[in-house]
Length: 287
Image (tube, rainbow, N blue to C red):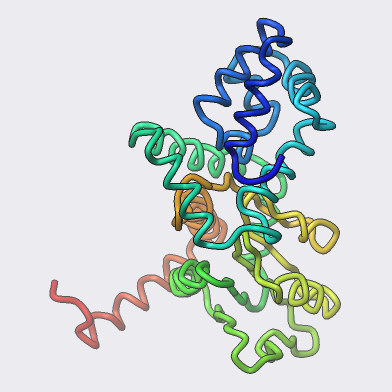
C-alpha cells in the first residue's frame, strides 16, 4: 500500500468478492471511515461492529497484512509517515476526508478521545502517574513542536496546586534545568505527538539515567517510549484534523490536575488560597 489512504480503499474493493458476510461489514465500515485504520485497534472495531477481533485480523490478512498492527503501521507510514509525508500532504489527505464527512463525525471522534482519557484514569499506570506528579520535590514539563502550548499550560496550572513546577525549553541546548540536586526527586512530564521531536528519546533517556521519573503524554502511534519508562499515556490520534488540539491529551492533562489536587488535599487548597490573595493584591482581574 502506498500513496495515501485511497490505496487502502482500492485494496478493499479488489478483495471484496472473496469476503465473508462479517468481513464485508468491516469493509463497509472502513470504506465509510478510512481513517479508522489509523486510530482504532482490532478490538475497538470488533466492539463497534459486534464481531470478534479475530475476524478483523483475518480481514486484514486478506488485504495482505500480517494483522492489525502491520496494517496500521503501513497506513501510518504512507498517510502521515516520515518517508513521504509532510504538512502539505497531511493537509491534502485531511481535506479529502473533510469533503466526505460532516461535523457529526468530528464530534464523535472528539467524544471518543475524551472517553479514552477517562478510561485511562482507571488504570494502575494513571494512579502511579498521579503520585509521581503530586509527591516529588519538583516537576519539570516539556512539550515538543506544537505541543509546547500544552506543556506551558500544564506548568502554569500545576503551579497553582504545588510549588517547584518548571517548564523546560531546551534553549540552553542541554536541558540544564533537569539536572537533579543530590537526593532530589524529580518527575519529568513530556508531551508530544507525531511527528515526534528528535530530542524526545534523547531527553527521556538522559533523565532516566539520572534517576528522574519520566511521564509521557503522547498519541497512540508513539512507540519510541517503550522500554524507556513505564509511565506512557497514549491517546487517540485525531488524524482527520490538519492541526488538532489534541482533545484526548488535553482532557488527560485536565484530569491529571484534578486528581493531583485531590491527592494533595488541604495542601493544594491552601496554596490556591494564597495565590488568590496575591492576585487580589496585584489587581490582576477586573472583578
